[in-house]
Amino acid sequence: MDRLQRKKRTLILGLLACALLITPLAASAAPPTEPTDGCTGVVQIPLSECQALETLYNSTAGPQWTDKSGWLVTTTPCSWYGVTCQSGHVTELDLQDNNLNGSLPSQLADLTSLERLLLLRNDLAGSIPTSLGSFGQLQELDLSENDLTGGIPSQLGSLAQLQRLRLSNNMLTGAIPSQVGNLSALQVLDISTNQLTGQIPAGFSGLSNIEELLLANNQLTGSIPTQLTGLTHLRRLVLARNQLTGAIPSQLGNISTLTYLILDHNQLSGAIPPGLGSLPVLRFLVLSNNRLTGSIPVELANVATLQEVWVNSNALSGSVPAGLCDLENLSYMDLGYNAITSAPACILTFDPFWEETQTVAPADFHATNATGSSISLAWTPIEYTYHGGYYEISYRPAGGSFVVAGTTADKTANTFTVTGLTPNLTYELRIRTYTPAHDTPPAYQQNALWSDYTTTTAQTVPGSVMLKTYLPLLQVH
Image (cartoon, rainbow, N blue to C red; front, side, top):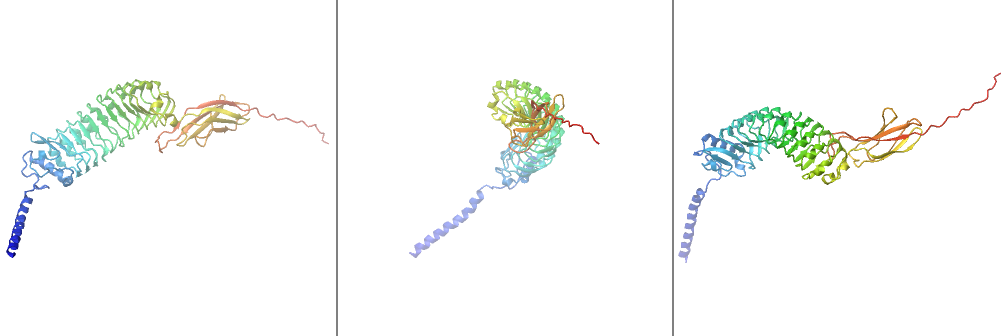
């Protein structure tokens, strides 16, 4: 029995020994999961291109990438995640949404045949390398939605083949380099949502093939260059949320391809150009939150393709053109927070609450009582009674000049008495509404709004007659 147990024990120990010998061999047969030899042995592409990829990997925390399949592990970089090759050269590098952290190395310029560089939606920081301007074949550069800082390198203006340049949603500063206007092949320029300053370069007239010019959400100043009106392929012009001033160029009506004209949240002034009514394919017109005055041009009713019109928070007045009711594609309008006096009934379909937000003169303005030196007035308050403001009342006798009698406490008031008048005299009286500029919800308004006047006449009553008493003369002794 003891001999049988010894045999079993010997067998078990032998099996354990075999397992210990086999386990290291199995472990050594598994492929490595982290980079080992870098570009050693790579022959698919030139060594300089492989080293550029290796530098990018090391500069942007490659081991933490979301997908790093093959990188610096295999000797076939053209099979690495995000890498595309043609004719023995890297032609595309697409690592968007891949958790790249760190800065872009200047060695990327060694990818001399690169046509597309897509690194959007990562956590890249630091500046854009000026060496990227040496990509002779680059057609698309997208570094948007990162944390890049510094200026836009003027060297990017040398990318003669570039068709799409997207640098939006970063923290880029400084002026837009005028050299960008040299990119005659460019179709899309999106540098919105940065901290860019200065003016829109007049040299953008050189963007002869541009279809989308997106500069919104920056700190750009100056006027809209009239040179932009010569961009005959432009479909989307988005300049919203800057600090642009001056008038909207009427020549924008000459860009027959324009479908989106987005100019809101600037400080543009003057009238809405009637020439915009000549845009045959315009779909979205957004001019809200500016300092525009005058009335909505009737010519807009000629744009059969219009779908949305935003003109809220300006200082517009007058009537809304009835012809807008005939636009079959129109689905939305925002007329709020202006001084518009009337609109056709159909407008309630597009903007049901437009009347509730207009700074207009009160209705039913009339005199309720008069004395020899005063006239009492009454009216119906306007619907828009919030965001501060008041009614201003003034008067004048026939042929005289108006004098401001005073203002009410707010826009809910409905009576006022003018005093200090002359008896038995006819007066012309008028009233208008004032709303101050404000930045309180629900609408930011940079304009101080005055309505038109409403007038009435009234007469003070005749004054009382002073009676004279004659006393008898008394002789003085």
